[in-house]
Image (cartoon, rainbow, N blue to C red):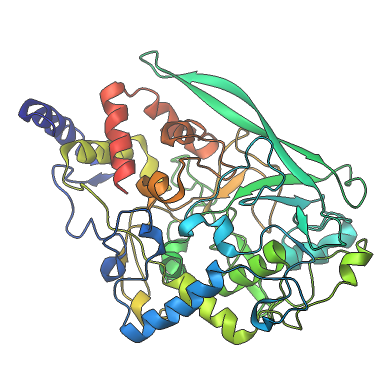
Length: 472
């Protein structure tokens, strides 16, 4: 426990930072309901299973539906043909055989170990530059697929089919120093591919490494009114604050129209139903009615000729159960919201400008897809918009309207439980940051000014900022 003198010094720091982001915010105490990140859906758990709980406001009957979806999310799929017809059809090419293998305890994935033969919860997305005769691919998929390997590398395969590649990572490092001289080493991953199963890659192939993100609160993000998201967009930086968040407009396969992107590292998916179907197809090689067919390319004849588990392999009933599950994974309550150090860190978070993109609060729509998700005051700390994050984080791979330098602001809720749930603290889209401080210091582009303010923080201020982030 902090001493009375330490608590007083923190309180004075808080009171000295009362005005930021053009608002008069009282950082001397927690806001009403601030601990309830998901409103009445908030989960009162902070152990290793905190991300695997149903929304707190589900009925007993709904909890049964949640449990059914959970079983299909956790248990492995098998190769067709099999006696377990409800779970067969895996592959022929795939990254893993169960959703839970990537989203560890419904939490965050991680880069592969140095000598691992399977990357598991790190995906490698592929594309090639657009040409005049490939516009139809961009309209439908957001990218132009690599001719032999498609839009995602699958490093596993059923017997008799060659995996597409083996994924290895190396890294290079550089350091940044705070104003007080404190140095932080930053690690940049470098992709190495070998054992290519289908010939050389296109010489202009674009690669993007993607870590599986946490699963909590997805249904609540889906329930934020579109108008509320667009209200924060400023694509031309009309207010001159250096922040020009903008929406991604993507393909909605069900309606065959363009929709607001919300999910994925570049907001490339419009809703959870399509996000789930895309993961079934590309991560596990399983077809749905929404996304039929296979993930084999025209160059992969043996893959195309392999047995299937029927069409679709994931039927509408099963897909609906998984959708219910992914919509209702609850968000844990915050901890220590009244702690003086946490409050001081919250003030510093706002003073640095972090809240300009990591928007603290929204209220979900009254007509949300599920009653438990409606009219909830939530605190995701994301605007769900695209932001230019600079050269250091750029993957140089566009996706629909997102450029190769742009990323969707990731929600921060649950951040402080990453170690407890997932067993590590590797952050950002490719897991390069080994802790929160490294993740902050990779921010550039629109976030450069905020990062530079953080670099002025002394040891006490750094500790307060991290205390706040770990309370989320």
